Amino acid sequence: MHMSFFCSTFARTFYTYKEMAFFGLFNKEKKETLDKGLEKSKESVLSKIGHAIAGKSSIDDDVLDNLEEALITSDVGVETTLRIIERVQERVKRDKYVGTDELNNLLVDEIASLLQENNVEDVLDFSAPLPCKPYVVMVVGVNGVGKTTTIGKLAYQYKQAGKKVYLGAADTFRAAAVEQLCIWGERVGVPVVKQQQGSDPASVAFDTLQSAKANDADIVLIDTAGRLHNKINLMNELTKIKNVMQKVVPDAPHDVMLVLDGSTGQNAFEQARQFTAATQVSSLAITKLDGTAKGGVVIGISDQFKIPVRYIGLGEQMTDLQCFNRVEFVRSLLAKG
Image 1 (cartoon, rainbow, N blue to C red):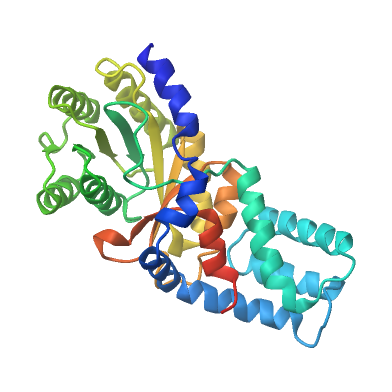
Image 2 (image 1 turned 120 degrees about the vertical axis):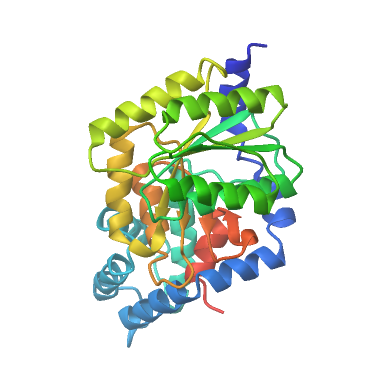
């Protein structure tokens, strides 16, 4: 079977092992990390929902108006909030009478369904089989969002799962970025391919794929420069990197992952808009969700951009980068108790 056909077909089912993902692999430890990471967001959103239903026994227009405000101010975004409110209205109409005490569970159901309808597939686990070998991920995002740290944590998780990982330091404009990636490489125990500062990023990507292929690597993570000062330059640079990589691996990159800082709320939406306009982003990693009350941004970004969130960052530890599970995420954010 032709490799590119295999990659594209397998990629459609890569993250869809739903029966196993839920009950087997989303264990107690992961759930505790998720709950802890979303603690501030949950406290904030539940407080706002509590205010929305204060003194009400059923979900009426006033409750819905207040709920709309609660979700928007929780960084869910206007468009997504209106879609959620519409679904809640339909549900209330269909179920005839829905008490306010049922609102949280109703929201969990409807938001999880909304994300499912948008083809946001759950990542099974880092040990899931990869679509092809080497599986090439080009990582994009502005400086300061936790891009290089995310790559380091991904390298750790994939190595722990028994995968052979290679890193490419193609953010050659910032000496600190190369140095930071090398530190991660040493910590995790995976090779980092680099060149001198100011080298051609495409050349680094080319060398990385050659080394990875020669050494039978399973997954390659390519770091790229985090600049947005000129969308045309960014577009041209990323296109060049892609074209050069394809000389080594014909259909690379298999995934263009955009890293966003969840703690920036609406600013993360704007970055997603700019990057999706500049290149074909195929997945998202949303970082720094611990210590912020802006966790609702994950729901809005998932919904509006129709791009799957694959990973979420919930803390400083290497194990605090989790595969995204939409139902467990929504439960941790909204479910009482």
